[in-house]
Amino acid sequence: MYKILISSILSISSVGFLFPEKGTASVVLKKDDVAVVVTVDGKLFTKYVYNDEKRAKPILYPVIGPNDIPMTRRYPIEEAGEGEAKDHPHHASLWYTHGEVNGISFWHIGKDTGKIIHEKFLKLEGNVIATRNKWVDSKGQVVCRDESMLAFHGEGDDRAIDVTVKILADSGDVTFGDTKEGSMGIRSNPILRLKGSVAKGKALNSAGDTGQALWGKRASWVSYWAPLDKKVVGFSIFDHPTNPRHPTWWHARDYGLVAANPFGIHNFERKPKGTGDMKVKNGESVTFRYRFLFHANDAKTAGIAKRYEDWAK
Image (cartoon, rainbow, N blue to C red; front, side, top):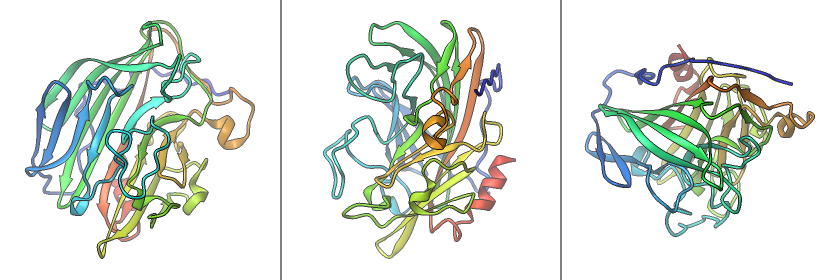
């Protein structure tokens, strides 16, 4: 069984990883009572929704990519768009959570599931949003907390979000359990799906796997793209080399769910249940870093392998 105990990997005050390309665009943050609106060069990029009682966790929605194309599906935040399935209401745009934390599912929505609740902003300036959130069970008891940092970048029409999630075991030992239902996820625009009525997507990972073969495989990055209006748009997700169990496994479904999950070894490799458990002892922490890159062109043309190497340095 994997037992990785990690303490104080990264201070939440860190600025994050800079966009490697030159000429980074102007990023402006504007907070209201529900969300922080993020604009890049005066155009909407995304909203960090931190205080919506309909959501069981903070999310990013919408996420606008190159050519003003939405990169995530509308459902369940809005009415389903063309080609969208009204399934998995917990797949809300872009998020971080997990399906088995001290035996409680924070991934699903329903009876006896947990919620991630915003507590405070630690930083809200420049291109950085940093927050503290509490993970509570169905009775309101705190299971753990996280300190999360989002750093937003732009270069031309491309956009990026660097995500740092520091899990704090401040209320007792915390075990992130061995399940495929996690963790750093996105539910894509149906055009980018590999299967479906409007799907045109293709996929590649750093190991050379393609299409549906990405599910359950380990890779440093994954990339999805599709043609739309005579252009090609896509997104890539990077797993940082400092992350525990790098390269991570990917819970990557053909219907548009793509999630980095370092815990679900039982499902991905058919090993005994519990193999993927990760325990964080009381008073300690564990940190994960990812990048979401929303880009023009397919993985090869967009130079994703090289851009990952530059970011990982």
